[in-house]
Image 1: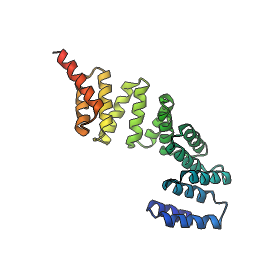
Image 2: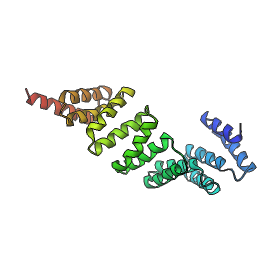
Image 3: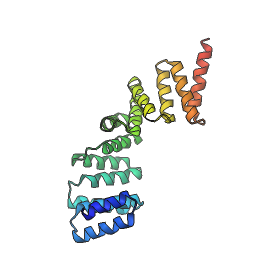
Image 4: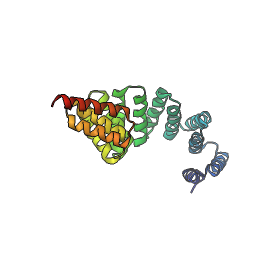
Length: 221
């Protein structure tokens, strides 16, 4: 096991000081080791040293412009700093250099989502769901983007799947209720708003939705 590999293992186990020691040694032994700089960037980002992390990621890129995980790491720092446009640029570079895991698509989609660019978020979130079908957050935000782009009927099975994967997801139950209401399924909507309130009694939107559905049913009597 190389020092880089040992350092990653130490990071995963929470032994950050030992990981830093190993990465320092790896860089001293091979100052051209782009992987070591990338790993050190990830370590610095994990402890909140974000500006220093970017320096290490950019050093890794300078040593090896194909170092896709360095672009991804930089993207994550920019995302945390709410520089979503910068994050998108970094994630897209990571993908262009061969990184095609679900997480990079999810983070790209979420960056577009935070910019309220739901249409451009859809392809990335769709791919994230395709690669990681059990990823609750990816599927929930994919469903939200479908709903935001007036594809409400298409969003319904995804909200239903989120509820199956995470029965305690109050926001998913609420949004499914909204989708049911849109499709004039009043009893289904009311059931979902009630479920959201059962999970989160102070869910104001679900409470409002429940009141509206109850008023509608009362008028129909």
